[in-house]
Amino acid sequence: MTARLIIIALASAFIVARPALHAQMATAREPVDPRLITVVQNLPERPVLRVSSLHGYTEGTLSVATRANLTLRRGEESRTVPVATIDSVWMRQRSAARGAGAGFAIGALTAGAFAFTAIGMCEGECEGAIPLAVLFSLGVGGGAGALIGGLAGSTVHHWERRYP
Image (cartoon, rainbow, N blue to C red; front, side, top):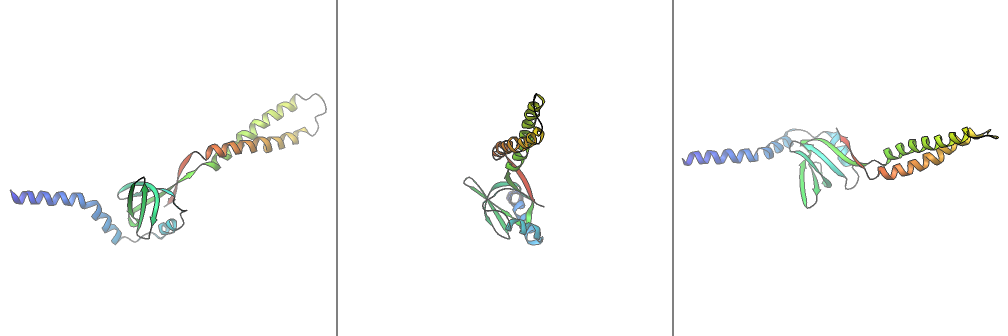
């Protein structure tokens, strides 16, 4: 009976410790991809990362980066991920450029529609109005649209893969 309890206790301890042992074995056995080291070294200060590893996904603000480990912090909790176990690294980015591009297109098309409608209603001398309408559409409409779209896009986040 006692031998059976000892075997059950050892098996349970092995099952609980297996992921940590597997990560240590992977760290000791597998060389770290130099591209990953380059990515980690070139990250901006305190980025928000999502890291996929043998332990699953870990998300948080990078607080410490060494050649062996990444430490991510989320609130009061801190998790260390061995670099040798990392499959992918994603960084949270703002979408200001995407928003500005979409806003420019929408603003220029809208202003162009108004400008060319006004030219169509012209009953007098309208020579030279088309180049002015194009400039107005791109300059005023596109500029205002890009500004509004950039501001709106800066409130939206997306994940950008940095490794592999």
